[in-house]
Length: 355
Image (cartoon, rainbow, N blue to C red; front, side):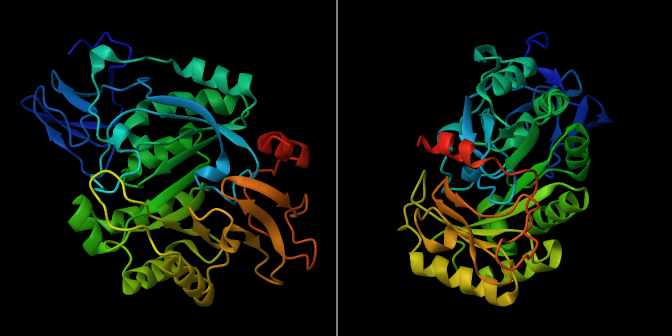
């Protein structure tokens, strides 16, 4: 492998094991690689005894998108983030919605390289408020993220990840130091589901969510309710309990509708199941539960947890009414509402909606 390629760059998180072997320390799989071997995710390789990323700046997508689509409902409402991705993943979900990216191994000699400077310049030119690494698992772009985030922060932009949450604590700390402001984590069931579908451990994900919040990173959790996979009622109740224990009642919890994709063809999640999960979360103490992928449903709105007033009315990714005050309170009862960052003006909302 040619290490002079701009997309091939040595990783700052690795451990030399001698005899030409090295351990990758970016994700909790902690792959041990011999010379010429790639890790589980296929984006990192041992080259002459050192771990290199093969996808630094090799972007598969680059576009401005509303922050609500991530979904971030309590982070910079009404803003847009320049969103970018690369290839492959460290998980193997059979229902992956972006399988055309996550199931594609990178080809370093065919990379479409875009520099960190160009990403930040593009965000500023388009009027985005921040950056987001998404579409496929953002940790694949860990090294690149560090450089983009540092530049973006210098220009006053926020930085976010839409992740499965399976990074090492070392990686999470480096991301935070570089400028990570918001982390949306997809929780994919309980212990059994993680082992069955991803050969991974759910405790790692909850640990990282908890630690991220303690670092001052804004955290939101999404639970994809997959038919005959993660839709067991006891598993959902266990997830709600864990959410409250690790992150507290004010952290948003989204129950998202699954649709058939990739190798999984069970029917879409019944809306009634999502409504049940939402009601259970409210009953158990989650202040801001949501339903996702059901545009126009009443449960995708934000309600005041004290008086029940509709504070943010949504239709899918669009905000169509916003009533939280400038000092982040309910205009009716004065209750404080958990919002990170500033909300964008009504004029900005109208420009996003095209009205």
